[in-house]
Amino acid sequence: MIAAAEFLDRGFAAGIDFFTGVPCSFLTPLINGAIVSPHLSYVGAASEGEAVAIASGAWLAGHRTAVICQNSGLGNAVNPITSLNYPFRIPTLMVVTWRAGPGLKDEPQHELMGRITPDLLKLMEVPHRPFPADAANAPAAIEEALAEMDSTGLPFAFIMQKGDVSNDVAKDGGGDEMMAPPARVAGEASDYSGQGAAMTRYQAMELVLSTVSEDTGIIATTGKCGRELFTIADRRQHLYQVGSMGCAAGMGLGVALNTDKPVVVLDGDGAAMMKMGTLATIGAYAPTNLVHIVLDNGTYDSTGGQPTVSGSVNFAAVAADCGYARGLKCDGADGFTQALAMAQKEPGPHLIHMRIEPGSMKDLGRPTVTPAEVALRFKDFLTS
Ligand SMILES: Cc1ncc(C[n+]2csc(CCOP(=O)(O)OP(=O)(O)O)c2C)c(N)n1
Image (cartoon, rainbow, N blue to C red; front, side, top):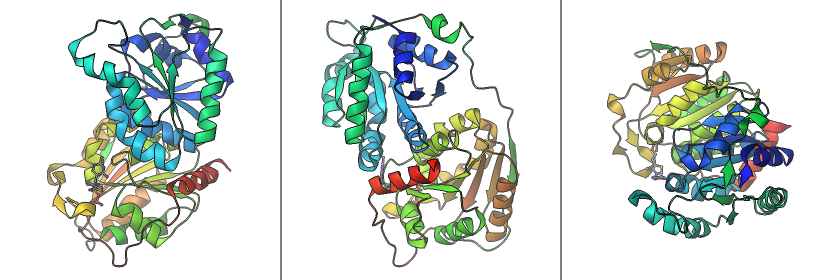
């Protein structure tokens, strides 16, 4: 058994200073230790997939990161591990607990995942080792994990069994109370609808590009949104999320919390609804430099225009109630211009819910830079 503080200290000495995840009772000392530690950041995510996206953003902004979760949450993380970390070559140290692990009589809901946890990691090409439960082995185990991640650019996992880690949080955190992010009052929801001509996604994105400052990092959701952004302009401050639907906002949060630069997330209505919990996480952690734009065409436009259920969703009101500073609703060029100006004038986070026409530009390109190149140049843009 290793003391949580010992493991966290060893990790910190090796550069791991940003944690995110979802709790498991096996992890309690480790998560609580990360929360109270004065030198570590911890973001409580709404889902494990969101945690992987947040960690990816923090990595792009220059941190070594860890995602801590239960093995049942590995299921929630499969999509970003395979379609975000893998193509973009974004590493993170995963600490995954092993409910229903070897010799452990556990609840029925853990039985199957308990049996397949190591195989699932292997299938996803995530190398794994037992969590270093012996303090003497921890430095070497952490070094091995970091060396492996540095050479592959991919995640590495420690599988933690019940009782691997003990609670001596006071040693590390000085016995501090665990602090939740400060409770936020609801932000202000405003409606700029009915002003100006309707826009397409392409036109709306051109307007965004013409108003944001040169030092703004822009993360575009999967599908035609990223492809259109690439076609309009390909710059190192653009990140085209080719997969991991729903993860643009989580990544934006991870970036925004770790940079002073302005950050814009270009989301789709389908993608935003896929990980709606991220609105709550953003509202709670409230990075002032984040503008989240939902380009709502009422369809899954990229896959053939099937209707979404966004017609009854007021993203601006939801965001304001989640703690965004402002939720701004609009559906025309003039309203969008006003919303963008407001979002850039005042500290955020802000969400702009822009209703647009379905359809895409003619001669739509596809990023010719590889995702790994896009990630490295975006990281370079953020950290240099
Ligand atoms: C997890 C996952 N499910 C489904 C898809 C297929 N897919 C790619 S783009 C897309 C539509 C996205 O819709 P929306 O976010 O509304 O953006 P739009 O295409 O309308 O711009 C879908 C369903 C995917 N890439 N990943």
